[in-house]
Image (tube, rainbow, N blue to C red):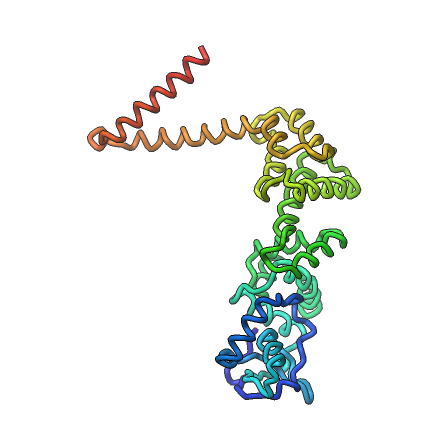
Amino acid sequence: MIASKADVYLQDIPIDKIDRNPENPRLYFRQRELDELTDSIRRHGVQVPIAVYKERSKYILIDGERRWRCSLKLNKKTIPALIQEKPDALTNLVLMFNIHALREQWDLFTISLKLPRVIELFSIKQGYVPNERELSEETGLSRSVIRRCKILMGLPPHHIDTIKAELQKPKSDQRLSEDFFIEMERSLITVSRSMPEIIPDEVHRERIRQTLLHKYQKGIIKNLVDLRKIARMARASNVEADIDKARTELNRLFHEPNYSIDDAYRKSVSEAYIERDVKSHIESLIENLNSIEITELDETLIGLLKDLEGIVNGILRGRV
């Protein structure tokens, strides 16, 4: 996918002969990061060459737009560049994805905006739509990242605009991250599959999104992990919890503006999940205890086993 060394040569080229790549997925360059890089280039120069291809009398960037922008700001006349042959449309875009995979510089949302273009170009070139494995091999992105991007790609336009606005802020000021929308959508997908009567159509889904968004902004939903409890409630049958109770609590959660996920979870499936986890731990503990030789027990372990015996006996007596 990346050009061989024989096809690439290093040269200082005029900065004013360089254009940005129209396929570059990266949309946002945070000013603080640009200022830091500008200062570094001012003191040490461009330490890593940019990568370009020749297009008639111009050079098109493949990698290094930030270095190029900062050098422009410093009024530098030339910049070191690795020059290669012009790639085809798919290779051009995939090169930048592979560079990203090595450096982890892009926001997930940036990737999601260009992933449909990769799929389109791949389909044109190969004659069929790529699966996740093929997309991963082409772009250098993990399959989990691709799945997360597909969730973002399916959001309504006004939510996409919200994420765009957030990404233009410094990282420390961002509140509504991509992760919030991904966690929310994953949970709502689970509700749709397990209890479709709660989310019968897109109108209901959007109302629920707005309710959860409001609660997160107001601090009623305190962290992103809480959103996963919604999916656990929708899967109440997996832990033999009261399905009707879980359905009632989900409806309250989705329609009452001040009702928290913690309250809904505690009143519906919390005990069932605790019991399942305790059972799993006990089964593992029994397996480990059965493998212990009596001679291996030290005083600390004996003390812990006695504490455990007291707790178990108390639980059993409480049920008599």
